Amino acid sequence: MAISASLVKELREKSGAGMMDCKRALVETNGNVDAAIDWLREKGIAKAAKKQSRVAAEGLCHYEFDGNTAIIFELNSETDFVSKNEQYIKLLEDLGEILAVAKPNNTEEALEVEMYSKKISEVLADATFTIGEKISLRRFTKIEKTDSQVFGAYKHNAGRIAVVTVLDGNNSEVAKDIAMHVAAIGPEYVDQSQVPQEELDKERKILKQEALNEGKEESIVEKMIIGRLNKFLKSICLTNQPFVKDSDITVEKYCAQKGMKVVSFTKLIVGEGIEKKVGDFAAEVAAQLGKQ
Image (cartoon, rainbow, N blue to C red; front, side, top):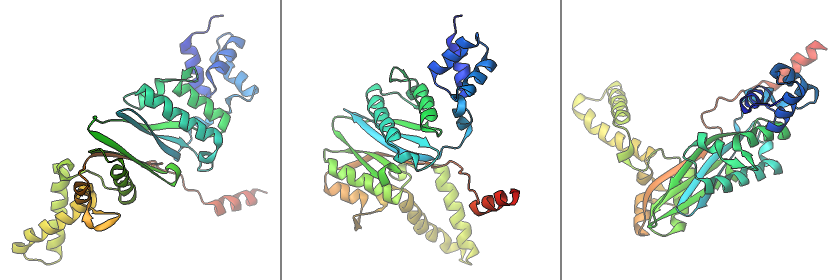
């Protein structure tokens, strides 16, 4: 019987098996999805099904460049061990090359890009089965620059942290230095103009209450707030920070000395924002021994 693409997709989502395996299973079971799942299980193919619900908070971040376009993304796995697997690393590098050329606008579009004659979403489902852990493209960003700008990039710990910067000017080494600074210090914004007013207002309110709680007089509180707010901005704004390679000058001054100016930066940290399950290994062993 003819098997529709929607039926194959449904089975893939339920089983985690590859597209061709799902199609073959549906052919063998006359299009019955439940029977097809059993068929896949019997063949040992549906083992990836449970993996789709697991937390993939490890992996690596990667970037690639194509002319005036850069892409940066996070490819997750369940364990750090898998991120050192040759198959995983090849997948990471191949993804980068293909996405840099395809130039999708977001993660959703990236998953639809063709790779190995399949959609990337299908390739990742296949990788989940063959590698034995959930493999997912969690985040993807496309970055554009002009001809008068330059990219900088830096990876820390093989890609646990990855940064891409854009600077006005033509000195790529300076752009790389700024990427290294971002990786090390972790600013949130390029400069004060990017800080949302509500964030500034909130910090000002906190600082004022903090000063009042210290017993400071109302008349000097406002002056104190200015100094403390500037210190806060230095902690979150890249251009205000002491340059990591020369703390006597700010990032802004370092760039100016080289005829450069920071335009933007994009930073990814593996697993950032994902709630990781923390287990008590000793308790698990004790529990297992108690059952024996």
